[in-house]
Length: 176
Image (cartoon, helix red, strand yellow):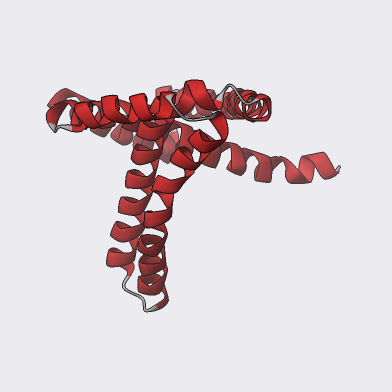
């Protein structure tokens, strides 16, 4: 009974987790392009050399520190929310989130090998990967059902609405 009541909460948490994972996966190539476009490749090489000389524990500090400067940005976003500047709040929070995930992906790429030398970090990393797989497993039936609805059987308003969304998605992908 309790499991059935909590099912929507687990699905929501899984969706949030998968959105984070999706952002991570999709921002990593963007960060790689930015690194290639501006002189961050030299910085990445320099940082990799410095990280190689550090202990795994000190590498953890290198991994954690870049997120700290983004905290004031999030506070600004909350202040904007509190004062009902909705657009500014959304843009500020979204920008902070994207930059945070991008910077974290960049730094994690540099520090991953050293961090995985710590057994407790390796266990946490494996746990996060398991949670990600479980979240995908939990959300996959919902995604499959949505795809079935989009394909539809030609009946009802939901079919028309979902077909319109599908046509819009196709037009966006064709525009790229």
